[in-house]
Amino acid sequence: MAAYQNPPRNGEGDRAKRGGGGSRGLQRPQVYAARRLRREMTLPEVLLWEQLRGQKLGVKFRRQHPVGPYVADFCSMATKLVIEIDGEAHDRGAAPARDAARDAYFAAQGFEVVRVAAKDVLENMDGVVALLRLKTDSPLHHAFGAVPLPASGEDF
Image 1 (tube, rainbow, N blue to C red):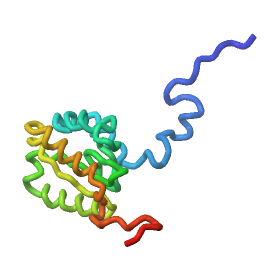
Image 2 (image 1 turned 60 degrees about the vertical axis):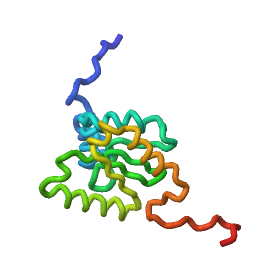
Image 3 (image 1 turned 180 degrees about the horizontal axis):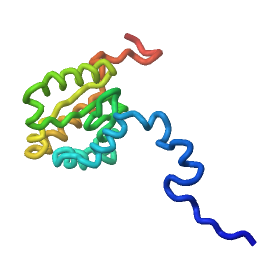
Image 4 (image 1 turned 30 degrees about the vertical axis):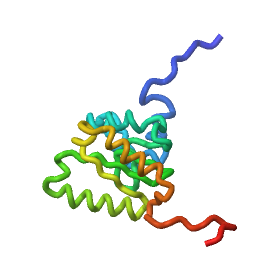
């Protein structure tokens, strides 16, 4: 009868030789940054996430979602909508230039960016949700701002 062997501990066995770390796609620094940001969300982000999660606005939102080299606070892939929560720090120093570069990148990827002040989330959540509902419900909402072409078989 063979003796029972305990499974290898961390760093032991054949797994330690292969390196681990997950697939190549999970080794991007943006993914790790997004995971950290999900754990460390600010109060306005937490409050807004409660209003967005579970498709309460009719579309799925992702929180702290990597889009290229950036991490969007909230992102709806179906409507190509990015929501950014801006605190007071976004008005100082080089932050406005960085925000403009982010917005330009998101626009180049086909996303519309909605910037919401953290103060508005804390003081006027109903107004913020109403604005976002307009953005997600609008049948003419398209990321490039273009009017949709008629479906095949429809007249111009």
